[in-house]
Image (cartoon, rainbow, N blue to C red; front, side, top):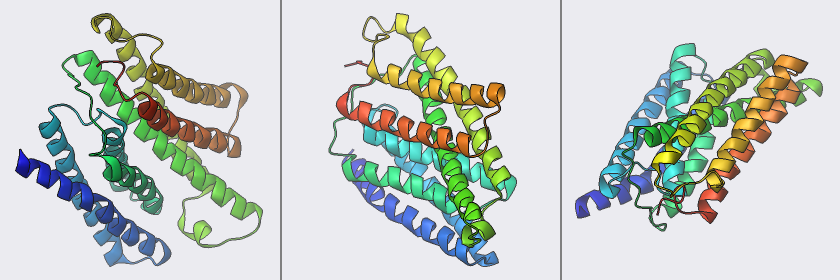
Length: 277
């Protein structure tokens, strides 16, 4: 166990710096397109993802539970899933110009996690119920998807302002067009909404099996429901009222900010996982 803890400390310290290195590769290639850099940044991201996966495995083995027992474990897990989802998008579409912005989000999450990971006591969470496991996994995937949508929507608004001001700079030259950014953010929101729906349903179904330790008034469940409602209403406004473009970008960005606050603030003020201590 001492050797495992030492390994955790080393990887936890190195991960933010490794993400900084990959971020630099992506940002340099963003401003100066280069075939070698295109390959190097992708291989580097895959390698760092592998190290991050080892980090999560060690956390799981060391604490004896999934790495979601406090806000800082949750942040490193979300950072990992965000990178994996983005890497899948990059490999499947060949579009890598948004990678530096995705990595900035992952770097932020991982940096906060690495700073405070061992200062917070994890809860003694026994995740044996399939419903609880489904709730946790789908919630993490849902939050990661809406984080990606938030980044795409922020890029949409930045590019929209440049075009409206007749400033055709690097963003205009290197980013996908507005229509593509809108489609990518909408696709991510739809995926995120599906995952959050499963998380909500699995959580509600698990309540009778929680032996009275979890209630509908749990702050984290309320936060999940509010995030789910924000994106559900956004999708409804698009389908029924024809909202699109900048309106949807603003809604998706605000939804991401709220989901981030919900995920972090509620965990900080309520360190127990769904009152399971």
